[in-house]
Length: 468
Image 1 (tube, rainbow, N blue to C red):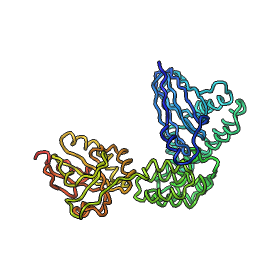
Image 2 (cartoon, rainbow, N blue to C red; image 1 turned 120 degrees about the vertical axis):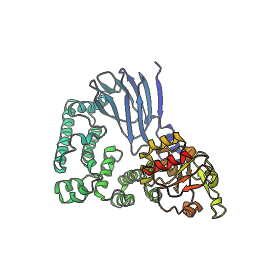
Image 3 (cartoon, rainbow, N blue to C red; image 1 turned 90 degrees about the vertical axis):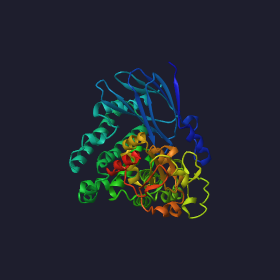
Image 4 (spheres, rainbow, N blue to C red; image 1 turned 135 degrees about the vertical axis):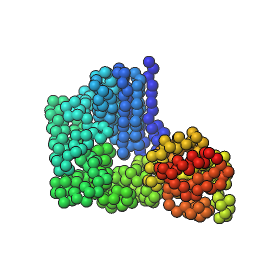
């Protein structure tokens, strides 16, 4: 069978030339040579905060090669099924510039570097720990054992698990040579993971947030989390920082408050990483544009700033000609598929009943409604109802990214530029979002303030329209 070579994030690699941060070189190129002797799929997840690396790769092939450009050590997490079909998550610490062989057989998974016994000891560490202490990584692994325990008991159990992990590392290092850098990195990973293990359940629990300061063991634990600039590239560090910030902030929906707190309370790359995490979390904030612009000014980590620019499409513009007048007949919108302006009146000529959804990327209710009513839309789309989406975003990139995430068809997705000055907004008094409208076959507005799709009344309206 031929070997398939997969080059990961080559685009972002070359894109970084123009931005001015240090490029990976040949010595920063890691290659994973995968040999799968099992019939089961092998899944890789590699995420780095400070390198431009985010990989989810699935392989059923007998042989694959994955190429990664990075500078900081990465935690590569594999997911597979064991002999009794349970999920096994295994971590490997991958240094840049290495050639690593990963072999999966029906009963085991191992990684090694030819002729490097020290690194092979390190690559085998998490596998050995997983066999004794269970999964270290994996979806909700931190909650499965301790989920129903009271907070104080949960904290104690997690501290005990932290102690067990450290003890395992000590014993492993006595029997198996490890580098001091590896030992230090694993120690810090364990230290910060206990914060993720403990805090994940409480991120949106306002009762816990308001009461934990009076519980000394928990308050001390959260307050005393170590801040360490030397481990900003460690995913466990970034996750622990974010969880701490979210628990310490009563209203996690006030994204600007989270941003300002991160900006005020932290410095250096710790602040860079935490603000970056906040911006990823704050995708639905109407103040996202202002926060991003501020971060581009104050941020000092060029890779993270580039990731923000790429993620939210900063700098993307569309040449938009202003409407000729305030008359609704001159109003225009922009089509996502072509980026061209079309007249509002042309949009109305659908020749079928049409449900129009006015929304924005920062509007959580808008996007929840989209996700929760997919089946209904599919049902009535097949029966002859058209669905059109009109965004009022001011940032082009936010509109494009959110449209893609929500799976909106490009042909039916539009932008209402400068919506606050739009004759469409004035004509139909569109002041809050989401807002919906029903258009008849002849292009007439049947209902300028229609019910949501989650409203049971909408079926009656649709069925009545389809009878005409």
